[in-house]
Image (cartoon, rainbow, N blue to C red; front, top):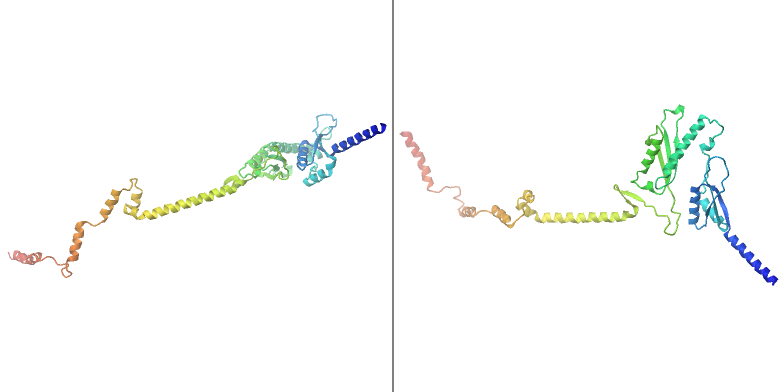
Length: 338
């Protein structure tokens, strides 16, 4: 009985150890802000790794509350796979030392240079935060080059880096001009022409999530002869366009054929003037035009008599007129004698 109890205890102990080993998790990333932690969790889950975001214990510091940081935990059996995925994606990103860190507030009275650097970096971060609120923007960074006292003659310039979901790929989008106006309006003396925007589309093609909550496919747009349409509809647009061209060609050939067949009739009924006359063509008008164009009976008779007359008598007047012409000079002589 005692041995049986020992066996049961050993069995339950091994079972609990196995369950504990299966459910154990290990932290692979520490101290991440919420945005980057979410990005890592989404990437690992999409690759089949059961990643989990855990809140990091905040250190007790006086003053204002600091930002909540997060840790990433994965099952112990998937540590190697998770680290390989993160290394391939370049996550977590290496953070360099910013000007705010270099010129951190030290001492009771900050110098003028420290105040200027804090103002410039704070303004740049505020602009980047505002740009991130736009629809379709994943991340943004703004760098403003302020001139020194020796460079007052040089114009102010600014550069903006944007990671987006495809909104800037649309040729009809005016978001780039909006961003330029936003940055230029926040800095006195800066014009939109001196603001450079560099965009980069987020690589969501490697992330696939099954289910209705999965990531939606971004729509690619193309410009064809000034017409903006989806890239998936390009083949349909070409088919409809060429069909329309073919229909217009057939209609043009039909019109040319009708004009060719009715050209003689149109010229008979008055040409272009009669064609553009709103009065319709009738059978009576056609017969009238034929009568006007055909020779009359009198003309036909005269032509027939002229053909029957001998060739030697042509041009000689009748005999009854010849004596009259012959006597005419004699009468004129008698008048002169009188």
